[in-house]
Length: 353
Ligand code: BGC
Image 1 (cartoon, rainbow, N blue to C red):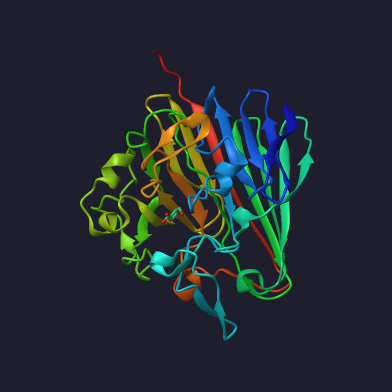
Image 2 (spheres, rainbow, N blue to C red; image 1 turned 135 degrees about the vertical axis):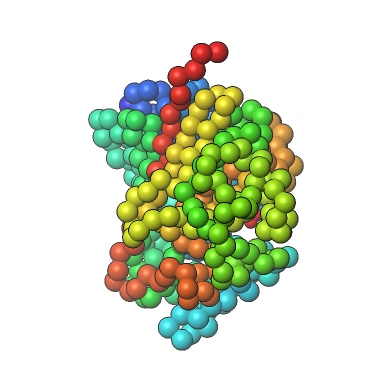
């Protein structure tokens, strides 16, 4: 196993950006940038299965795609960027102006921040922690929030993300990672034939602005029923009002679980490469996003991407929970410690070619 740090260029103000690469004995490696605590690559079985860029400019100019980034303080959407906390109205930025909502932490979300990193050298399982203090009032969120995300690459090719946070005032929190996976490799074909299983009986349907209506919709008999493995395309091209609204799948799946134990949330498998990825989490929701709004663009190695070239598995509390009393609470009380864990477990089935 090894850990290495390389330069990943500089920001416009000359701040140097570093890339930390963790490698295990199988030759699996993951690279994370200190800009946005961004997962930049996952190389497994000789393929890089993450969309992203070769340069820091790519990430800085990503134009709302949040490739690989750590998302905070509040992932997904907040209607009108507005909610009540302890009786006080909080107004955060409406960075998604077309929908007049707050998306993925707003104008100055965690994805655009520099993080401090600390490498933890374990004999078998290399890890690196990224930390930052989100000051009281950042984006108008109350409380100094100390937040750490630790990426650990295990010997069995699972990558675990541990999120920890504390605050000195009551605040709200919804942290996730926004990686776009393509199990055919970032330079392979699109994700539509990737097989997907999702451990969810319901989704939280959305209105035209992609804000949850507050209802729970059973997946039974809809394109959102991935309880038996099926190609992603079946959902993306399914005939359903909810699919039309989002141009594919871009929905919060209500994970079948009890309490906060780690459970299998989803499994994806590419018949082309035989690469399988399981996603485990202790969180209640999973935003499955099939890359419906990926702008045509050039990514790593100049590869040209378009929609459906990557999928995201964003483990989370439900979107707009701050305005939905029936959704699990996203309150982090002053003095309390938040912890959650998500693991992406990679394997390759035996295959005779
Ligand atoms: C959201 C999409 C959004 C994408 C990129 C996803 O998490 O659900 O609606 O377009 O992030 O910003």
